[in-house]
Image (cartoon, rainbow, N blue to C red; front, side):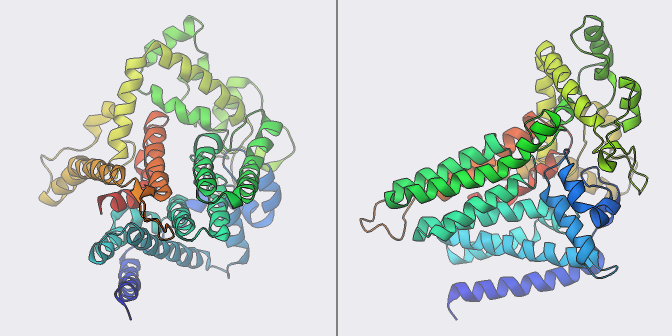
Amino acid sequence: MNRHKRNIFILVCLFVVSRVLMYMVRPFYFDPINFYMQYLDPEVLKHDLLNGLWHLHSQPPLFNAFLGLLLKFSPAGMAPVVCQGIYSLMTLGIVLGVYAILRFKNVPSWLCFWAACLVMLFPSIIKSETWLFYTCPVVFLIIMSTVCLMRFAVSGSRSSFSLFVLLLTILVLTRSFFHLILWMVPAVLLCTGYAIYRNKSIAVFAIVVSVTGLSLAGTVYLKNYVQYGMFTASTWQGMNVAAMTAFVDENEIKELEESGTVTALAVIPRFSYPEAYFKYYGSKPNTGIRVLDAEAKSTGEGNWNNEIYVQASVEYQKNTFNIIRKYPLKYMKAVLNAAYIFFGFSPYMYFHDFDKWGGIRGVSVGVAARRVIYLYLAPLVLFSMFIAGFWGLSGRLTCRIDTDQAGRRKWCPVTVYILFNVVYIFVVANALELGEGCFMRVPMDPLLIIGCA
């Protein structure tokens, strides 16, 4: 057994042992299926999946499709265990993928091993593995797409190119954060351009595969445009960006309302329950379709896929842009707050609620230490890792491809793709959303560890 096979064997063994111990004290958190706003009603997922997915406008369809299939085909009461197993396998794939990428970048074997171990035990990776959310699948898709691009860079395999585009398509259809135009088109152009540059004989093949992938990903955007008039994978986009007005006082917003700059909706908290919007608009949806009309799910939680949110989201978005134009400095303050949350492990840590964060006086040493770590040290460490990882990746934009007979160093599509993802995640998470940036950062964590190594 050579050195790299031995390292992989040890990594697998360490992963199995660590997960057995971890799940003894940290069981898989499956409860969100009953109340998270991103998910359809569990009854719809189990008994009316196709119809629910067709009328799903708040999210891309694939993760809800996964949940529906999980509920339909798992043995009675075993859905959490099955999901836990799938998430663990994806995390193992992430660990081994990071090891493979570092090997490709000619990083010393011992450093590849320890970097993979760090990914295995990294807090955000463990959190995503034990939590029913799309963070773990998204990290897995990012790493596996990088591995496929790496294999294509080494061998020129058409199957690797096709799988790369397929994984990009799946990612766009899983989370709206990865936008068809802003994310997938540049990523596909990168790989297609490299494929043609590398071997002009596969130009037609590369273009056909790329156009096919983009067309498949675009079907959801087209469906939502035809059904709801919005070319997007999530009709919530206006409510998401509305968070960036958090530092504008309510009195200032009311002044804008009085001047006609914004509508009265601007003072209604985003993502309010449907009833608030029924009262505001003076009507309720009456399509005859359960997932569009129902005010609540069968679990008692609000139905966040109610059609009323489409209208509200469009209005929120217009109001938000008008508010930002009037108060650009307060938008910048929201961006700074978003960056602080982004480089931490705790969501919704708003600057204007600092007094609610919890101090270190009058509490036990353990509580004080935990607050210092989570509120101050963690953001500093993660920011430092971001700088080091970005610097490391920027310095390795060229690589020696095995099939290059001339032995010349060429630009490396793998490094460019990783850097593109790092920049995209950082910019979008901090410029367009305030509150949950620490979750949006997670797909970037393994990429930064690669850059640091």
